[in-house]
Amino acid sequence: MDKNLIIRFFSAVTLVGIIFALYFFFKEQGLIAFSFFVITKGVIEYKKMILMKYLKAPTFVCIGFLAICIASLLVSLVYNPVTLPQLVLIFILFSILGISFQRNNKNLELILKEISYCFLGFLYTLVLPLFILKILSFSGTGLKLFVSLLFITFSGDVMAYFSGRFLGKRLVMPYISPKKTIAGSAGGFLASCLAGAFFLHLHWPLLDLHHSLIVGGCCGIAAQFGDFFESLIKRISGFKDSGSIMPGHGGALDRVDGLYFAAPVFYFLFSTFN
Image (cartoon, rainbow, N blue to C red; front, top):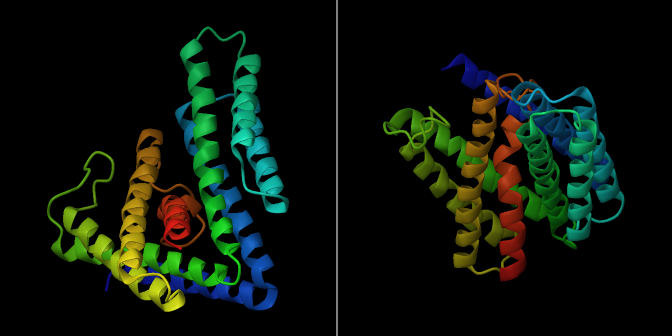
């Protein structure tokens, strides 16, 4: 068996054990603390790849990005996830940060890029994962729905790996992700559909089976494009992995990129069907 695959397997088992231990000893507070760590790590990885390496943004812009993101995360954990007025305020703050501290820079396009990529990073690394906390907040069923989302996302990821490795020939997006194949994507989509049908119908019997299939399939598609999006970030910044948090798995964004895209889709669809 591939040595890297063995490392990935035991790392994943260790991570699952840590999550269950946190919930066993600290309940929802343990999961929230772990989420805070992962989200913060993702913000730092995005800052390193895009702001520091790709844009070569000044130090104060990078520090300002981190400060705004972490402050917004703390506010979201104490009160409510980011609202539309808060998003508008964040955009204004990033605009002030980019324009005022780069007022003597003749490269006006770079200033606009810094503002745009800061706001994009805020949406990607902070707003998207906050939907996981919204799912956990569902009264009485939040934890079960969160587990369902994890199985939908990661079963698709695992099946995409194996079906692509043994059956894959044609690449889906060779310039963005040179190893992902059509067979892998199809296998991952099928696995997500089945996982959604099984776990959602198991945990929420009142949800129709075809609705469970739709939720699983849509989340599976979203998760795959979350993977492509993170691959795009790594390609333009020249990184093989977003960081190093787990042996064989890379950084935090490498592990939760699909989950970040799948969580909002899961939340909206489940809320609609329910």
